Image 1 (cartoon, rainbow, N blue to C red):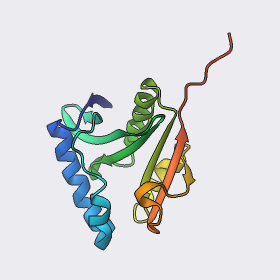
Image 2 (image 1 turned 30 degrees about the horizontal axis):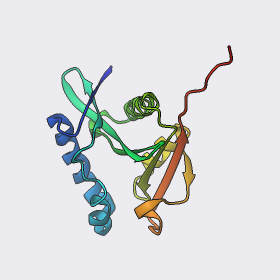
Image 3 (image 1 turned 90 degrees about the vertical axis):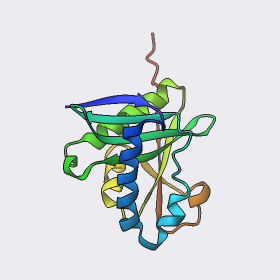
Image 4 (image 1 turned 60 degrees about the vertical axis):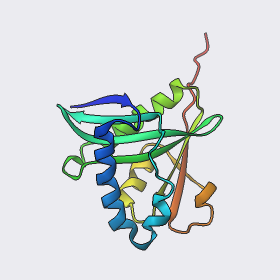
Length: 156
C-alpha cells in the first residue's frame, strides 16, 4: 500500500528520487537530455508528493503553477522495482486533487517520445494531447498533454 506525503522541494527523500529520475532520463533522452534538464530544476517547487511503501520512498511527482488557472505536472517517477502496480496513477490522482484544492482548473505536462510508459499513463488517466506549449513549442520529441480538473458542482 502506498502512503503519500505532501511536502516541497526541500524534502531530502524527494531529492534522492529526483536524482534517480535524472539518471534514467539522461539515458532515455540521450543527446537531448541537457535541453530538457534546464526545464526540470527543482528549486522552489512548493507542491511535491513523495510516495512511500512502509518507510521507503519509492515514488514522487510535483505540480508547479504555470498560469492563473493551470498547474504543470513535473518530476513524475516510480523506482523501477515498484512499477506496474498502479503507483504512478495514485501519485497523478493525488497531484490532480491537490491542484483542485488550490482552485486550478487544468493540469498540463510534457513528456518525451522516448518515454512510452509515461505517454500510456497520461492517456489512460484522461489526458489529451495538445499542441506543444512554451519552451516545447517547436520540439519534435515532446508530447504535451492537458486535463480539465475542475470540481463538478452537483445541482442542489
